Image (cartoon, rainbow, N blue to C red; front, side):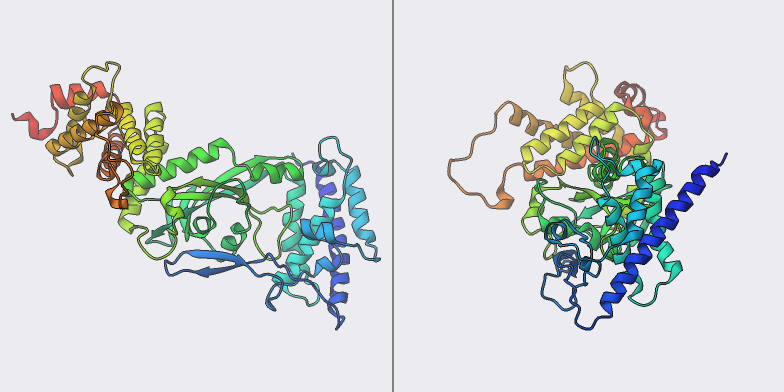
Amino acid sequence: MIDEAAVERARSLYRAFEAAFDELHAAVLEKIGNPGQYFSPHHDYPIMSRMDSGFPIFHEHGFYKDKTPRNYVGAFRPTSLLGAFMHVRPEKEFPEGAKLISLLKEDEFGKRFYQLDLPFSGHDVDGMVATAVERYLHVYGTGPLNFANRRKVLHRILMGVIRDDYPVTVMVPIALTHFAADRFRLSRNAYLACIPSGLQLARSRMDRRGSGAVAGVVSAATHAYVSTDWSMPASTIRGVRDGLNDPSQNVLEEIDIFFAALRAATGAITGYAQVCMVPRRWSVGYYVDLPPVFGATYRRYPNSFDNYGWTGSGQSVVTARELEDVRRLYNLILGRQEERVAIALKRLNSCMTRDDAVDAILDATIGLEVLLGDQENQALSYKLRLRAGALARLSGTRKPSEVVASVKKIYEVRSAIVHGLKTKKPKKRLLEPEAEPYVAERAAAADMLRFVIDILLEHPVYLDPLKIDADLLIEPALPERQGE
């Protein structure tokens, strides 16, 4: 049943927003009409250029470029934190803006603007109107007010004030990885897509402090993993900003599922440095003409990326055929609830982002043990290589004998690592990067874990290792074995 009283309150609030918007818009147009009027630049407005590698890189316009977007509303109200500190409010009064603040102060919707035990402040309300007018001027121009265009800007602000929940789309730029498709559907509510230029510029403004992520890596993404149908419960305006700038654990877990599928299917050296939360049909403020974006910066990528990995060539390239495998594994993973699958995928992600080859090998072998081991630890490496070899019969892509030999070699290396059997290198001898120990063994271990994960996701009945023994070792059931 529709709450008519609430509907009327929302309409009254929107009319008050319109009046405040029109008042400020008219004042700015008057300033623009003054020939000698100076408008300061949005000095931190980003610019995007492309490197030879094809990846974007960002920098700011600065104070002295003629093409820097002008800060029109800044002539009356600060639209940034720096502006708030430096701003001296002019003599002109804005009675419609004051009425809007008074209305919200007395209305149920105004609770969104309270901060803990602090008294109601109109700063956030002023900021919403100011950034809405600024966006309108940069998107639709400085001509006479167009009511339809005003509604496009203001309606999202109203939704940011009155909604009971806030729908968002999760967008994760994929660092230093090229893709053969501009857009690729992964599931009903997830896909891979090129990042539009507006979102590229918007994400460049996200704070990197404390993350350890390098600016060149953060910028170097042409595509993103996109997950829809997320929402955040209603909160204060400040709470919305803070919550979306600190993505919850279940968001990070779904992101890790995608990257596990990507790595398992392709072996790509990849990762991410940002999680972007993009509002859907609502806003609590704007920055010039860019779409609103919240989120956080992370360091979830290999250390090698920091060494100017975004320049030149040599980055991973994911083909159209590999994307089909990514989609297959992504959906298979979403359908599995077993803890051993989650642990193995986590170990795969760690293995393929580790800087230290020894740690990566241990990650891979732990993943194999979780998938192929049982409660009896006797002759563990022997059982693992037999079970991996048996699973190879299901794949049709590798010979069982080769898989057995590969697992045996991996576990010989593991044993040398954990028992300290490897002879130490002479001290103070510098090594070339390719001469670093265990590079080939690391690649082999990661490849084997990827192989086993793929088979078990396709044949989940064998997530029980004893089932492998019964069906594929003790009493083979494959057609080519039945005639023996």
